[in-house]
Image (tube, rainbow, N blue to C red; front, side, top):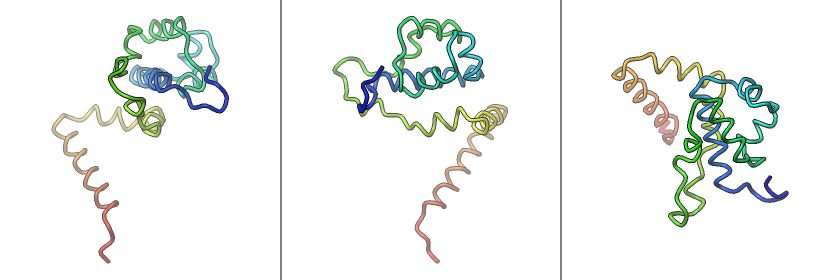
Length: 138
């Protein structure tokens, strides 16, 4: 468990985010996964948010339950000495959105589109974002 008053270790943040990502990609709710591995929903939330460190045995159980190898939770984690903690900082708000009901619905609908149409929708969203962020010319 991280020490009080200290930020979680970047590796703990990465593993927690990977747990959330794999869970969402597997279309498994927090409640379903927590029940499957014998912990409370609150404890799973603490793992996913890196408020509590995940033990090796728990990572094993999570991987078993989600049908992925333990190594999946460490993918993208820099090797020792390759780069600093800043390389591990992923936007928490993105994981939160993807895990939300709205994010899941949007993702499901986008996946149903053909790759060509999906690319056009992505371009449209990018254009809208640019327009919203552009300085006002009025």
